[in-house]
Image 1 (cartoon, one colour):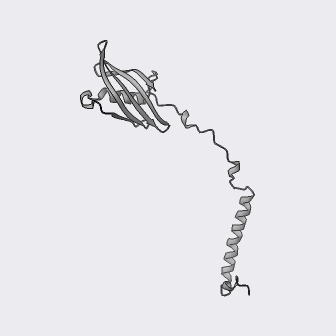
Image 2: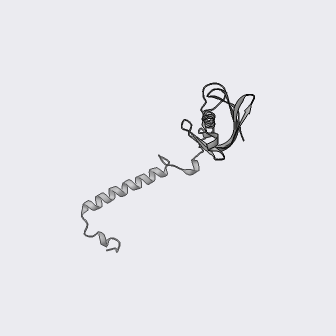
Image 3: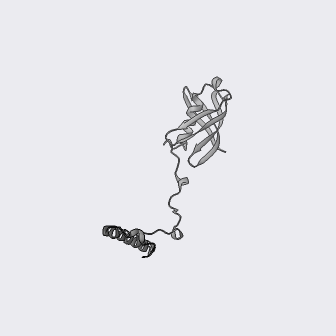
Length: 153
């Protein structure tokens, strides 16, 4: 008897039947997979150009003014801060609507033409990267702040 088959001498016939069935299924799977039926080939894979994440527009406030939801969040953070308490420290902000967050630095306050204004620079972090900005918001009526300027750097 061949040395390879010696270990199978005392096996029941059902062992060989189930082993043959498993082997047959394995061979059939390999053959069908090699024929391209349900198979996958990296050589034939193509880049899906229909998904462009940078093409997602920013959420807008709906006012038609071009002010984004993140700018409104930044304006609210700048206008609500106690300038004496914040002096020289970065101010964190986050917008749960867009998922953006960042920090506001170089915050300064001036009076111009009878309006209280706050100039600032800061950062904005989103899934598509980090950007820097500078801007200014002014109080035009009691508790009513408007963005005078907002520029991405």
